[in-house]
Image 1 (cartoon, rainbow, N blue to C red):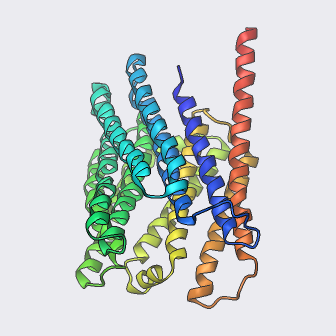
Image 2 (image 1 turned 180 degrees about the vertical axis):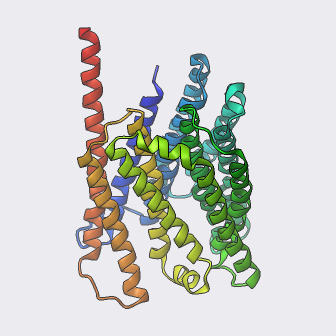
Image 3 (image 1 turned 180 degrees about the horizontal axis):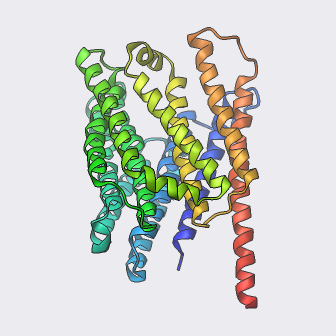
Length: 413
């Protein structure tokens, strides 16, 4: 029977596939293109779906089961959900690059949504009663709710494509609806919920009053900040007002979160190894910068900038996906000793992240601010993207070697 550690390693392979696809997508825009990609948009669809569903969803779901589901018999039921998700992911990985959004790929992505609903019900039903009174469970439950809510976007796409077509403003709004509640609600609350669970596990006391204020304000903020994702479609003052109020509520809510976990977090932080401390500092800094960028998008100047230049949006999405969510998954897997995250592989990963973000935003600046033209920028971007693949391969190899040595030691003993 596969362990949850092996489930996470499986998701890490999807991260590698995502990185390799990203490299070839970058390479396609250079003079060194090998014409491997028959249709650029089709591969983009595969890249994004495997990143969000194969890497992040599977990674987070493995951790949630590890922390909240303890009975072996119940975990065996989760394995069925896991393999159903695998079938859908492999189907999408094959169908999207060949056909794009057609009947087969839509079928597999739709089935995946259904599997994710089953997973949501599985967690709600089988989490032991002793965990359901915890603050961490409340966050995980709400995170999974937003995961389900985000799927309204994909469900709406079918009807919109049939009636209004892909050129309709509603088509793009449905996509942004999905991305907003995936990135800003499901991912964020799941990460915070897991962190809070770890603090509770060590018997650290979390201040209830401030925590309750955080939950209340976060929900208002998440719903309201969705309007920031619609500013490209309308510039009405009410939309700006709702979006900016949402940002304000998020900042205040996160202040109360920090107030509630400040002392427990400091105690937990002091117990970590040097590398883990560095990653946590990087994660917090990256998340704060993400919030600053999100808040700035409520100002008309920056909203128009993002609307006019796709690189601004891509840079923002990759900043959060690679610099916060993915790094958090690697940090947690390393903390649980599910993977070996050496200083070398971590350094490669961060070099790739910083280099790609710099080049993406610099390319945007070349258009918006007329910055000096950087020759071979796309080649440098492809090279930096390739480093992601190298870093992930090293993590996989080192993790495999350590596991092999551990198994040999067990046999000898």
